[in-house]
Image (cartoon, helix red, strand yellow):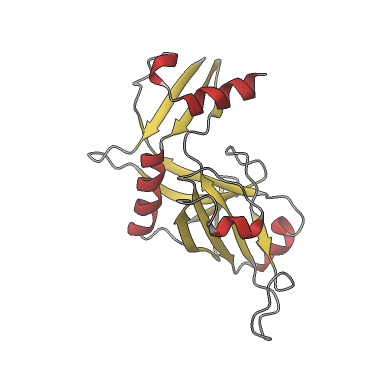
Length: 192
């Protein structure tokens, strides 16, 4: 099966334009919904309404199917870093969608970081075990309908990015020699 690395081409308009909240994130990581019961803050903060989770995981094979063609895509650690930076540099913090379809108001990325130390990363506080280079974010939900009808009910469970990326392989199938061992191991696990 074809494996395609997606990259950010500095000469093109490649970027992440929105973060979508979805029921089945392709990166297979759910977010954590924080409420005031889990952390003690100011008395007037009755419910924090913050979602914390992986936005993009490096070297994670993501299955895709277009018409009759099946393949995997992945993002290198460098591409994940660039995507996280460009998203903020381009002022897209409040660009959100529901299931990649409906534009949402009232969702804002309020915190963003890359996992650089597995043992001392903030994501550990929330029970996440994420690979180095993972883009993690906190999204504040100031949209009552989305919080009550989608987050609290479990209809959405994670983040998924929307963006434009170049295809490094130029639609050529990569050989196993061209792929990192991490990606091959992930694929072998998926194909068992």
